[in-house]
Structures are given as structure tokens and as C-alpha cells.
Image 1: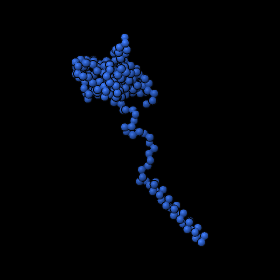
Image 2: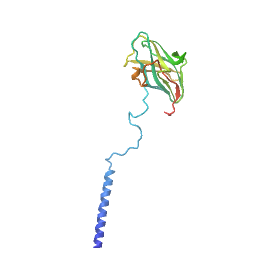
Image 3: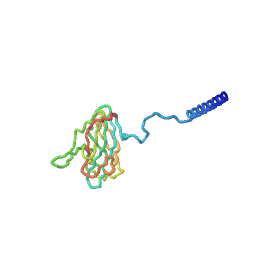
Image 4: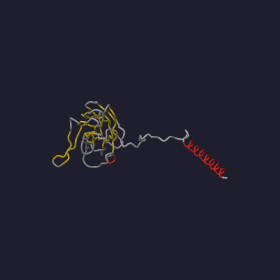
Length: 203
């Protein structure tokens, strides 16, 4: 009886082993999708927006121009981030050829005599290698002077930036209300705040 019991147990164990092997084989069948080890973020999950324009080592991000209420001979401004990859450069000028504007200048906003004043910066601004120049409300900006037409949300400014090394880069800048812009700021003076600061992320 003991011999019969042992044989029965062996047969039972053998059947269990066959069943387990069958289940393992089924789980590793070629028809099953493999688990991906790719850690690249899927589209839309990156924390860095794509550049809206590029020329050589120069990349433009988050460009927008401020809408105007339609007052005659009014001014506006354009804002953005400018990144220099690989080598430094300098933003030395801007233009809107054929646009309804009397003049385009590089400006900065400074505190003088207890009030905010805007002034032209003819020499422009240095952009460090692997660094970013930010044009934003309250500091550096591209000034659109003497508009003969209203800039409304949805319009486009055909802006040209001039760089010391990269040359001329022309691209379309969308017009937005200040409260709709990516800066999240509204109201108040102009017109841009920004400094040329190295990009520490190494991107």
C-alpha cells in the first residue's frame, strides 16, 4: 500500500509540473506584447515645448506679441525665449518688413526716478553658449512702435530677428491678449522681463 501511495504521489507531482510548465509557456508566447524598457516620454508629456523657429544654433520658444486696443499710433511688444545651442551669439536687431509699424527696436524696461521707463538697447543682448535669453514683460522685449493697425488676438506678426553670428531669422509670432499668454501675467506697464542666463539643465 505504501508503494502504491508513493507512486500515486509521484504521478500527481508530475502532472502538476506539466501543468505549471504549460502555463509558463503560455505566458511567454510570441503573440503576447513584450514589456518596453524605453523610458522616453510619450508625445505631449515633455516639460520642454518644441521651438517655434530655428536657425543653425539658435532656437526660439514661446513667442507671442501683445494685442492692442486699436488706438492710433499705438505700440506693442513681442516676447519669447531665445536659446543658443553649442556656441554663443548676440541678438542685435529686429524688423517687421511690410508690417503696419513705423519702427521695430530692441528695448528694456528699467526703474528711473521712481518710475518704470523703456529705452532702446541698440547693442542688443548676448546669448551665452547653451544659455537662454528671455524676453518677457517687465524687462527685455522687441518693441513695435507706431502701429497703424490694431493687433487683435489671432493676428500674426511676421518678425525678423538679426543675430551677430546666425544671421536673420524670420518667423510668425501669434498675437494674444496679455492674460492669454504663456507668461500668465496681465495688465501693468511693459514690457518684458528678462536676462541672459545660462541654461543649467544642459538641454
